[in-house]
Length: 454
Image 1 (cartoon, rainbow, N blue to C red):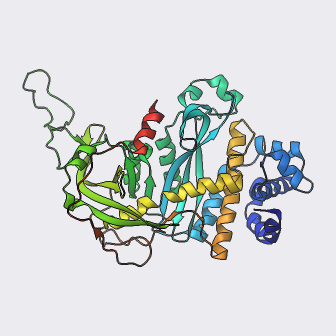
Image 2 (tube, rainbow, N blue to C red):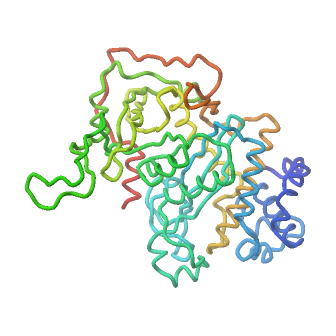
Image 3 (tube, one colour):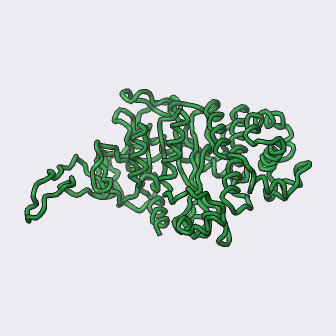
């Protein structure tokens, strides 16, 4: 946003910030917060504190640096208010919460949480920090509204290093799915309206994450790796207390008598008639189409079958070089396959939020190394992003000029079928019966998961 555009929106920005400024405490902090948000929105070659201070009348570099890195204000309270504000503007009972992470490249070893790890933003393993984020996506728009810093075990096991970076003593190691689950739970406590959760295989491969969503009675459509295993019928379980055929102690744990199979093997056996073409999203160059097939399966979670059946979705790209991707959902059978495909397509929204957050709101342009500074800066950047979201909503603009998923619509009660997106004929487009499923190939999510594990 250039200076002229920012000046024209100054009354709206002042009104927007008036809701948040009391959370910063002292009056001088109000001035600092407004200056930082204004500087983040102003753009420029680089939105570091020095450049922001020069662009803002009365800005003092050291004062603003201290406000971000050491200021005594609660970023969690700020984000709580942000969630309430976004619910007022974008709230929808059928909204989708999208979980994903993004990397922040860094040099050296002092920045909190920095290690050599996989970064989706970079597409490789590099020296970086990683933040796990949640985006709220409804028919009205989408924006980031919560985040957690991923702190690797090498950090949590080094108390001196954590102390030097200002990491609170009660912070322990949490996996990315555990951080995402905590944010979903927080959204439920905050009474954020939503029905769906979407995410990539980092989260879809985590039994803990999915069990949390089921306990919260939320539906999910998440990517899974090709090696996730499942049964096509409920497996018979070994009775408790029965002596094994070779003698010895009776088993005390339930165990399935048959082995689950990798989902890529199940997909390879699908007949040609099982595939249907689905319009998933509206892109800048026309509709985004995929071929989908689904199976009712019992997924293996920690070597045990899920309590009830779920839906294995196999997505095949349309084109000369076909690629398979695997997804799972606990939505009831009454919910149309088209609806599940569109929920999964909403994941593009979080990518757009990262792009806008970094490109227009300086999400990754911070120079602080400590725990407090990272959390303060990302909260202020998300505040700036939310302001842009509201202005686009007010002006009737799309949230992004790039390709985006079709906006989610009302799913209805669990006992009744429903769809997402614009009011169109929900019928699926059948694929010609001569089509044959290709040999499964590892998806990008699988490669990403393997890289993260290393």
